Image (cartoon, rainbow, N blue to C red; front, side, top):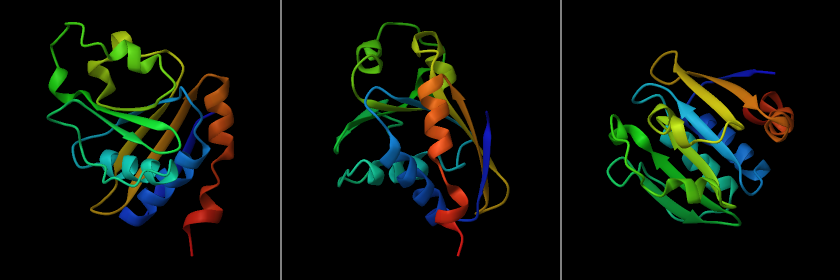
Length: 156
């Protein structure tokens, strides 16, 4: 039950992330797919706001993982630099924890990611407009996507 949402600008990207962040439960996983500059980290900033995180969220490109505490802990992975690496980095424990996990470039961690998750693909339409395709895998993620009310929260 895929949902497609068109976002007009950066503020709306953050607002969508914030709404989703408020709906998240412990031990939920979102994977973010999209080209460089598509808005994955911007969207994650919104998720952090929804989780009540006060710290500035930025890309963990060089550290692979950053963790932030709100009313739930957010583990933000950027697996881009893991391409071609296969050693055990201990991420399974985090993915198995009560943390909310956001994984950018999930294809580089695919062998350890749980099957059930919310797959979000962000497609760049132009400099500011984005298409978000939300594809829930598993019942709790289907329920989450049903709760997202884009039209009433972002236009106007």
